[in-house]
Image 1 (cartoon, one colour):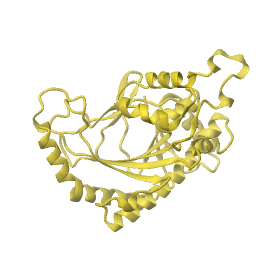
Image 2: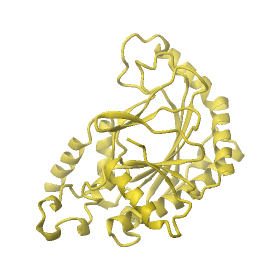
Image 3: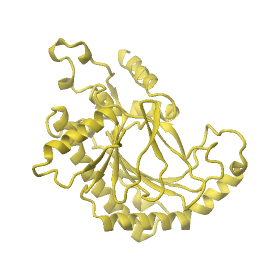
Length: 311
């Protein structure tokens, strides 16, 4: 059970085939993998981390403490199932950025997050093409499916997980699959907490310095007709230490993009396993449904979209 860690350093050289093979295996068997030498400079990531942690201390920490007090969370006795022990805010990058509108960010942090978004968008598109290569789809297929009429939806959820007095009773983030396309996570390298469900066991995603963790969202499961699956994951709160930082960037289809299994991946050689297993739907409709059901199993969501499709 070795969590897949993939070094992209020689992707464009003679090691391309084995690297692609590792990515394929990770997509088919884990739904998650971790990238090293992905092309985003370590010094730049250090800066993002430093400014994110400063921003939390300056603008978010006190607010979080007040929230905890107002809800009486520091003294909970029973398991809390409707709340996450996290402090978050959301940056939208595409189709229209909201970075200029967020009141708390200082100029340096604003500029760095804009640059961060541009670098991650580029990496997401490189990865989508590597997935196309592995799936035997034309280059650009996934990007085009995601495009809709206004381009993809892309945003970053900036989260901090402060130390928690009762980590056995409150999750940092409850178990869920991600609704969207491909997710790129830059996380704290000192504090672990992210876990995924593999063969009915919770497995830690190792915190590695300057790595980017990638996971598959529900939309890629649909487009690959279940060849790649989105996987349940959660964040465990920690009792001690400085807290954990996590920046999850979601490269998702545009709101009006129509999502359906790629025709090239279904109905080959009349094999039974290649029947169409997933519905066709508009991404925005799926997101409306997901909003209320995020922390429940994904299968009923797909069933609900099938019902919409047959109407």
